Image 1 (cartoon, rainbow, N blue to C red):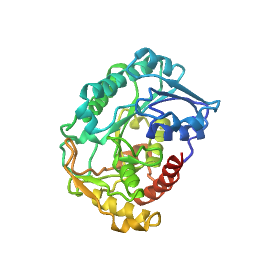
Image 2 (image 1 turned 45 degrees about the vertical axis):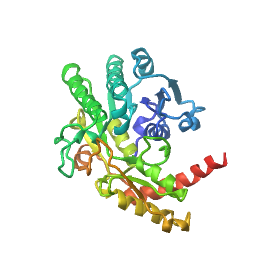
Image 3 (image 1 turned 30 degrees about the horizontal axis):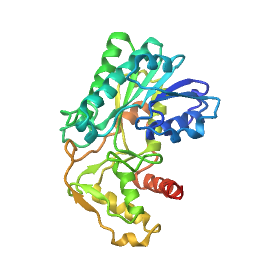
Length: 334
């Protein structure tokens, strides 16, 4: 797809040192945009943007979105804002609800207000499939949500409410993208709140049993990072007025159980270590706040944004494994 309309545009990416943000920045730089990255490095890693630091069209600001003055400084002169900064993870939000609220709600409102005051033309933000809460219907349709099951889910729903209020009262345009279990290069496999795919890959590469929360039947709509980057770029450049001030499911549109995921990863990694044939997953307790099943309808994003995800789970897994093989081995050597 041609995103050259972004050439020479000034774009702020918050949370740009994180997994999704840094991949998005790479695509924006390839489109020859001028990119500013705002990140406090609390969860993001500066190594994710190191290849960009010497580029004339890239600026890094270390700062916290909970500080309004920092937000105003970062957004100066920007035409577009891509708000990716957040404190993710359902389990973490259950342990630190006040911190999660502060970053995800106060930080979001700071960025939206700073963007409005600066005359930003388009504000695209990371929403979440956790918003569907206890709604058991599949596939998930944007207009049909349930009650949130975690503090994290509450914060992401509040973001959507604020976006609606800002359109209604200030005429400020935004687009929310509800991500479904994104995975791919630069996603950290370490830490208590690591996502399952990088965690499983890391375990299997070490011939260790991946730990599944629950009996393995829970299913997710796993979404490769390049699909998510495509959706963000489409949201930034869309000239379809009907596409503005909406939220969209960003996924592939298929679901895979955790046990199916482990088996797929084992199959792809057998050429890395034949010993994996004997490695079996371990099963632990279900995590509080987890939704049993998740599957997205992506019809709305296709119809209004032109979203056309290129990578299904298997294609994405192949690319992700190639990256982890190279980078996890490099980390060991260092």
